[in-house]
Image 1 (tube, rainbow, N blue to C red):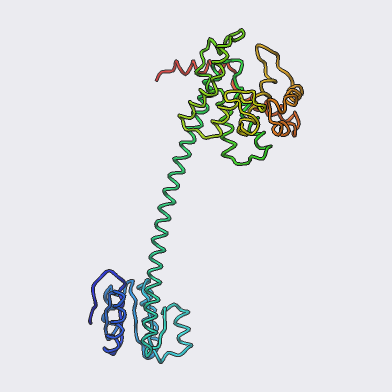
Image 2: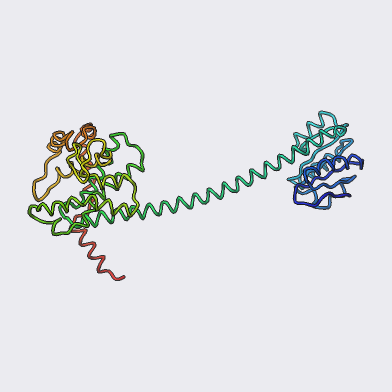
Length: 374
């Protein structure tokens, strides 16, 4: 039994009674740098592991039941063995049976050496492709696992992000009993208006919700002496109040929150006619989410009690909003607001505020937490 170069490539075993045939075929196969073994009889390998994951090129001159059983045993024992059968005396019916029974993988006429060589090359190419596919699937599985881990991390970060937003909003609400819960109501109004205007992307809608919750976050930097002053503000105090959009934007910019959030915080006091602040933007210069929020904010303010005026009903609020369409509000946003019944807006307000803990109860809960042992 002769052997070719010893390497880690596919092992090709050639079994044929003629040494000249074996040598010629072997020299052709070695051009592919394969490991080639030749022998005059199959029994030389049956008790070894040489057949495992190999290509067996075997000549069978006459097919009988004993040889069929031998082929079946080979395929059963070595599941990754490829058998290329060479014979001039196996009829078409027998050849079809061997192929359909999966007892051989290729059948070639022995007297056509080029055909045999082509079958070996085809099998080598198939194995290379299979190996590449296995590596691809292995890498794909690895990428899926990494993607799954990244998704879990992203969800955790999103949870932390949402908690931070809620805590910031609550910290702001607790500074002013008169507007406690205002941010939650306005955020829901803003989301509904956005959907009425054709915004369907859930990420954008959620960012609008967060921006609405945090719209007045800049007021944290405004002193209580100004923010809670019972009387009229002086011009200097009013100028400080007008800084809160810019202060709030600076805060969330450092937190790297998304653009819709920042747009609402920075531009929620801009007016459609350009008379707002801090930049005096007008019409489409104002981001759409800020134009949406401006109407939502006004709706809640008009229908809520304030120390300086009594609350009004939703019919009065609608009349006030329509009156200022094109001045304070974007006419397109006003049209979207008017496209559904006022009962729907009242229902949103009721469902939002009924879930709120009262301001007094919330303060009691915070005090009890402060007194709890660490």
